[in-house]
Length: 290
Ligand SMILES: Nc1ncnc2c1ncn2[C@@H]1O[C@H](COP(=O)(O)OP(=O)(O)O)[C@@H](O)[C@H]1O
Ligand SMILES: [Mg+2]
Image (cartoon, rainbow, N blue to C red; front, side):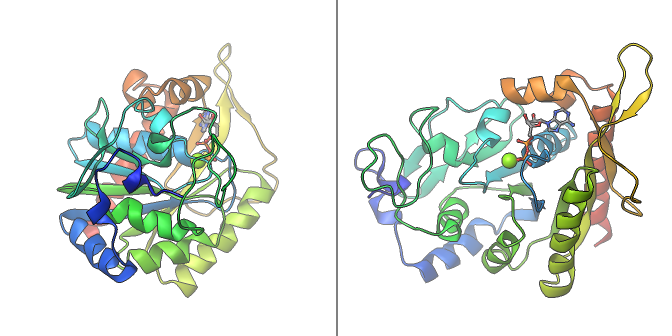
């Protein structure tokens, strides 16, 4: 089996170290990163990656130096959404240089390590010819390498798009004891909110991580013909008392995500873009206060 360090011919062999050494390196790598922000949700498909990509874009458009880690190793989508799916990573003994997208955002994703669009990410896939295999069987190991072997340089914000599941945050906190804050994404369905409330409780009470806030995605749809708001999910139950923002469904956002275009720059005046930009402003405000 190979690690991504070993993928390009002969480079990078001396960056493979022991876990402790890697953790130390991780701290050093992040020395010039001002704020790390984890984006999580209990559920998949609620728009976490699309929101991460657009918050990164909104922060970059405001002049911040931004990096994004696609920590969803089994369903990587950040590279595609941020328009760098076809870029190749550069390796040197000093580490991996992240891809820089059109807005100057530094991106690292498992996607950038997969040769074929169709290649699945499989753990322990000894026999599958086209599958990318990883030496670690644990996501956390891969994530540690992802963050620890990347030359991030100076950043205002490093956003981590976490995989779905409430169990991921403890791993991240273990790797990043100075995690600046957590953004929680939900959609207004009871099922999603139920799970998200569990994630929030764990983050707040067990891990003691600062919560920046909840983002309600696909909150409603605005009719193109009459301009009226149409709810997309059942909203009988009261939603969150306070959210950082409610992002409406907009087919143009889905289109831009598929095409790797920054929606907030392409369509800056739509209700969804305005809501996303406002959330980016609240994130900056949060860190000014803390
Ligand atoms: N507000 C929105 N309006 C339209 N499409 C959206 C919106 N939020 C997310 N999407 C789309 O929904 C799909 C799932 O979103 P994604 O970000 O991949 O979810 P997750 O990362 O939580 O699994 C993607 O195709 C994405 O472009
Ligand atoms: Mg995702």
